[in-house]
Image (cartoon, rainbow, N blue to C red; front, side, top):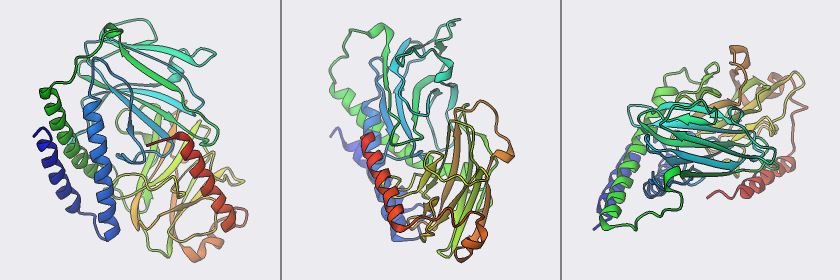
Length: 388
């Protein structure tokens, strides 16, 4: 049976999920099974899209294929590469806050993060007045600023489109072709090729689960609980992004108040994640906010309130039943390095003391009807993106 290796991998993957050390409740386990379903789907897609001679951009993660504390504001795409071939990327720049590219060598594994060969945003290339652009990736050295050299081992090109205003910004268009294969056609799938792809899908599935259950130990769980780091260049070589990370552990009578200056960067956003290291439901709950969505206080700071109970505030970040989880702030399209004073201050506050502890509490209040309107706007804007 061609599918046998993948079936065996699914059985092994279920054991990984059910034995995860952070499982405490039925909700934890059921979310693990949901995460497993998304991982199965993503692994099949990646195995079938593993085409380096006739590549195209595919969606790397989305609401049903989450991984790696995915950013609710970002559309992720990838294409596979050969390090000795030339590729042409053409497209039209959308109106999103940021568009960036990154070439990776290798893949994420349970013991390592792939090397970043190069990373840049669209400020590094020429975008025509109508939004169109063309860039090339290949093995040759070139003085052309729109030609990017693929170092030995280059294996994947990642593209990220980052939204700030979900309601008004529009995604662009991205195309990739291997330069010497334009007009040719790939051979039809053979039995051996399909068997190999099922085997690859199984390996991708297990590697994916092992890897991203290890990530929190590398980057989060060694930090003191209910704190966040100073802004730092995001691990993995995405040079135009800084981030601040932490993990929380709260009772229903406690909230985490995260206070951070509103940045001059084109993109700044905060999100919550589960212990499965994926984003919480961001389409139907306010589990993330960026500067276009958040309320900025008169002193130029944004005060986010991570809480299970509804505090009646515009910047409530809903825990959705997750007493433990991750919190991350990202800044993108930076023109300067961030300093400690650009980062967050974090404090655990009793829920009942919020009116006395928040300096602009009354101005930040929203009614239940107003908050329901915020959720309705999220749902509509999410649907417009047509993510699946």
